[in-house]
Image (cartoon, rainbow, N blue to C red; front, side, top):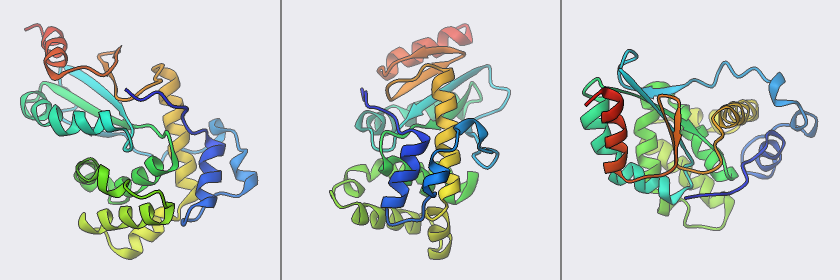
Length: 213
């Protein structure tokens, strides 16, 4: 379970300035997150909108426990509940560091249609793209993942240079994390009830109880 300090909107701006990508100015970094227009940051979800149970996962792309959940538990969750119309699954990014933020920018670069496919690659290759201690190399690794997912060079560079979008993404996660009292990843909110990381059997039992099974 990861317990780290989340990036603030100001920290987001400063790390992007230090990164190989474009970033916000110092003045923009002090902008109150509540003043940011976040309409471009879409909620990413799978499953029927009218599914009887809704689950929100809060996860970081740099979190090894999140990677483990997506590798070991998520395929069963998707097959047994999401694809079966029993569960609406919402994925919300949190950012412990600039690398997780960059990964989120790549994931969102292809829009909702490509988002979860890129999420899968980010977790499958987490150890590979995070292997270096050089930020520029990690950035290049993320570009490679974007290209594997079918994103063009121009699209990737435009997405990764969008400092305003980075500010908006951080503002959204701050708002959501505060509302749901999220301080570690992965965390799950199932029909309004928060749960910490758990094994799939326990998760399935909670969902089944919500379904009345």
